[in-house]
Image (cartoon, rainbow over all chains, first blue to last red; front, side):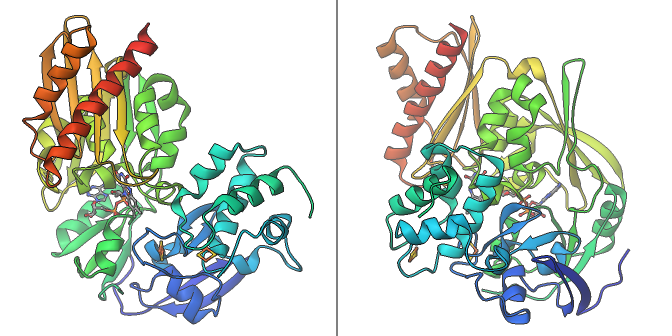
Length: 160
Length: 271
Ligand SMILES: Cc1cc2nc3c(=O)[nH]c(=O)nc-3n(C[C@H](O)[C@H](O)[C@H](O)COP(=O)(O)OP(=O)(O)OC[C@H]3O[C@@H](n4cnc5c(N)ncnc54)[C@H](O)[C@@H]3O)c2cc1C
Ligand code: FES
Ligand code: FES
């Protein structure tokens, strides 16, 4: 069993890169991503799981980074918006641009990651599948319709 | 909005978890964290030691043997929702697990965490009461089994002792037959305003309501009237005895509506 101490050294795999850092166990993954690693594309709204802005992919699945301690993510691979594409934009990102699926953009990284995970597991999602998948993400600007349109277009492989 | 400091222990076995839980006073178990971490972020909960169960091997297994389901407590809501055995032989459980929170919550939140947390609006505790499930509770003192119907004592209150861990859940696959489920929530993924599991047999009916009382509310009746008006009147009169925590009139109305919906679902499937 691990001995109890104030800070612990952990190794995280973020966007395919290994990071060694010292964290207090109480540090949330969202805060470590933003404040320790400078990955500020992960946004923080409510810190109790409701708004979805902090959603990242853990082993390919969407999870709330505000409801996971960074120390728990040891041994998993975490993907943030910064890791979505090495250069340029993915088809989904271009579809968001083309379909006006964002206004202020605060919610957008989390929508993109959630939709990326959906499209990986469901090649040909229905509108209902999409609405269900993104039901845990709040957008205060768009009214969602354009987001749904963008994800549908990306799923169908329509290029802008 | 940041948790108070605590020490973190990751365990690899149930035995290690039980030892740690008995060793440290003011320790808490951490499963999916989807209820506990919000409470800690608000500092409504300030445990000094967290014992993380995520690393326990095979803590998410499901098996079915001679009609008995055995599900270990660490299974996530999403895995329960998608599990082929559960889908085939206890479809009502797979269905309601898919209504727990949102996808990102279900990917982390666990069955054991939901059952132990005992939120009165939660689907899974009520499902277990409807299924007449058995919970195995493990501590350094050994193991004991309680029925779900005895486990729930009140609002966020259960029979779980401070040093106990909910490790396994058992129920008969055949008991899942003929149970149907309906709920009403403001948006998909929100906690239900009201929900019901209804089991219809030829000579008897069981209803388990959630979201309309301080804990799952189970009752057994004679056969239901087939005639719609009489049946709905019965649901309405039963629901009028419920004591919801708020919005009393509205929630009682919804309770009658979800019971009728669950009943109709069952009639369609069994027809
Ligand atoms: C936005 C949001 C929406 C949600 N919507 C719903 C919903 O619609 N329906 C619903 O039912 N739930 C909902 N939840 C809660 C969710 O279901 C949680 O997953 C669940 O309540 C707790 O499970 P957990 O594994 O996350 O437990 P944790 O948060 O880790 O633990 C919860 C409590 O149980 C204890 N505990 C955990 N595991 C065990 C165990 N094996 N033995 C004994 N004690 C244990 C912990 O010590 C703690 O006190 C929602 C949560 C969020 C954030
Ligand atoms: S900040 Fe995590 S869900 Fe709102
Ligand atoms: S674009 Fe502003 S919140 Fe979604």
